[in-house]
Amino acid sequence: MMRRRALALGILGLVACGCFPGGGAPAKGRARVIPCRRATSKIVIDGKLDEAAWENARPVDDFAIPPTGAKPRHPTSARLLWDDQFLYLGVVMEDFDVTAVKKDHDAWLWEDDVCELFLKPSTVDHHYYELQVTPLGTTLDLLIPRRGAGTFDRWKTWEAGIKAAIAISGTLNDWHDQDKGWVVEAAIPLAAFAPDTHKPQLGDHWRFAVCRYDYSVYLDEGRELSSSARLSKLNFHWFEDYDILEFSE
Image (cartoon, rainbow, N blue to C red):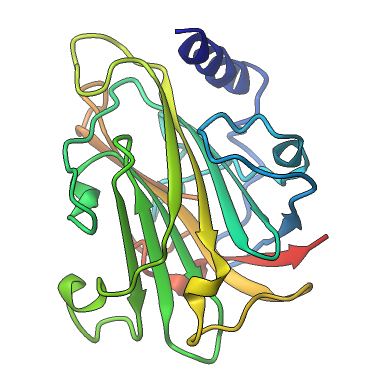
């Protein structure tokens, strides 16, 4: 109970202090360079995001609805870190109606509330990666060798070995009450990207986007899609518009 109260206060605090700004967003087509800083302390994957390393991570908190760039009703803040073994993802999401029912790995998780991470390590090679986590902790991971070259089922044989933990402030799958939100904390083994992608080195650039499917009885359309990247199409796979993740100290 104390953990849920702390999470609720954290989400409300982010909104109140303006950590989800409505202005200052980059123009469409202009990729930002976001530092992915090296974790300065051990990260325990427990959904709390309370390690000192997360304080040093660069927040990305101006998510937008593609392709208009409108501000989402339910804001999101994402952070990424790395060390010699893992790429870490921490995402705090405001959500008044947290829902997820799918329990099978590599199911169609975009039919639930879901947090998605897209990674495209090379601007020359065609392949890219998609990873998803729901409020149930259910995961999906895809290695897509070329966009449009096959359906979802063709690419789900790749296993990232993602470790994920969830914290929910509210009641999962009960639309009668109003929730506060949920948090994803995840670690992706860098070894999983081999042999198609070399292990990142200091100064390397990968294209990336953190995206959300948000289903809610409190949304006019019942669903809201948002992304950290300024996508010119309503397509989370449109990596031409992804931002740049720079592996840094």
